[in-house]
Amino acid sequence: MFDFTFFFNSILIGIGLAMDAFSVSLANGLNEPDMSGKKTLGVAGIFSVFQGIMPLIGWFCVHSIATLFSAFERFIPWIALGLLGYIGGKMLYEGIQEYKCKSGGGTECPVPQKLGVTALLVQGVATSIDALSVGFTISEYNAIQAVVCALLIALVTFGICFAGIILGRKFGTALSGKSAIFGGSILIFIGLEIFITSFFK
Image (cartoon, rainbow, N blue to C red; front, side, top):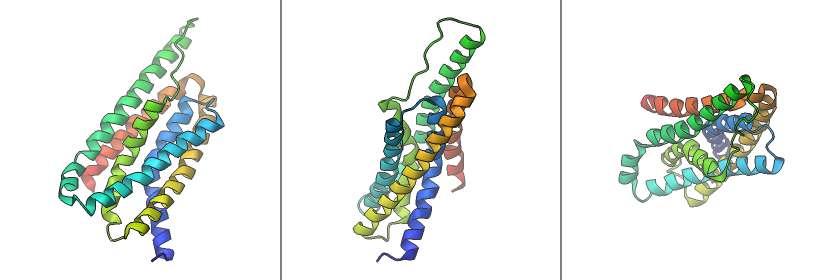
């Protein structure tokens, strides 16, 4: 039931799914270079939970309401684009306003917004919603295999996202006032990437 191929494939799926979450984690680190270690673990944890749960939901849908799930699947890229576009656009706008203020020598520049729970949950959904489709990929697994696969995906995602935040924090400190602009641009790009590539699958 659990052989080398199973673990190898699960880890590869995890790496593939975590790429969008990695980019968003990088953006979060850029936007908040002073993020605490506790919050860094929490952010990476949220992404890993979403990435692990979505394939399980997809697997359940395939084994119960496959027809309805297939109809919903076409809306996934639109949802991801909308969510990441909104969060990224907001971050980009705030970054531009902060940069203009500092460039003009303003004394009361707006304080950039730190990543809140709501924004983090939106990011988690947006970057993991395409993982619902993995339910089709692992549809031949039994329930235990599906759960183990989801756990491996979550672990891989946690490690990758943690590294992304740390990397973003380092660059965010170096980029100073421009970090929110880069972060917002990355989120918008990822939303567009998910949307555009969905037409080639």
